[in-house]
Length: 385
Image (spheres, rainbow, N blue to C red):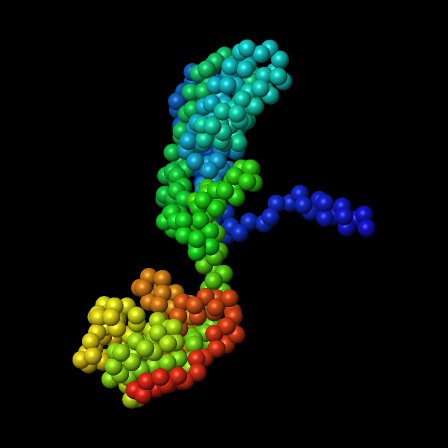
């Protein structure tokens, strides 16, 4: 019992595996190599032979390179995080080294103050803690520089490494500085799976710093939502989610009879079929309103027929078509009802937004919306199933 527990305990020390491709790993390694090489070379040119005691590179730049080239999307790797964090830490480190004689106390205070300032100034950069320590423990050559240490080598190293990262990422087809990918417009729609406000509220409740931008996290969750949706919709065709046994009318039916059917059966649309059961149009409540064909606006002499007010051409989908293909039609083109046709082009059923949602949840239509029985309340109306 002890060995499995110990194994599980130490296994928790391992981070979760990353999903980075071999090509991206190689790109990161090569970028860090080039960035450090250029930073050292430029600093060498700037120093010349004026001081052989000063380092061309300070050790924290190695950690900064890991972030800039290995995790360029991280908030910790953005330009202001790098430059601001390193400069603040350098200035605080020099100050603590000058005014506190005990190196241990000066080191601890320099790191603690650096973190305290990086939070409100939004320049949190972990390698900056090492910059603060370097200012305190760097030796006589560093101490002799005083506050110039923040300019050279820290400032120059930081700026050159930053410039190298910007150029390298752009040359290799990546965005840096990173901008969170916009997923959706800000919304308070209660029907949305989640909103930006929901995400921010959860992060605030967790009260811990996550190494990801809120916008990126929103985009990732949105992508997961879409992928899960597609997976659940995979191989789900219209025939499995459509409503059958729906009422339909011929184009010669009077508008009064068609309206009576809509009201009596509490439905919003009727497919219009010809004698061959082909869909020639669709008539909805909006069609009646648009053409002034509601009972209060009609008189006894109104002889208009469904064919006079129906919407044409009508968008139809095939029974074999994947349900996933219907989402843009409902979401972007304003469709609420889509007639379904079979392989022969004949009317087979109807799909609504409700059908789409039920299909997403793999809920059989027959369980919640059984086919409507024939209700021939007007002689010109046929129940076509």
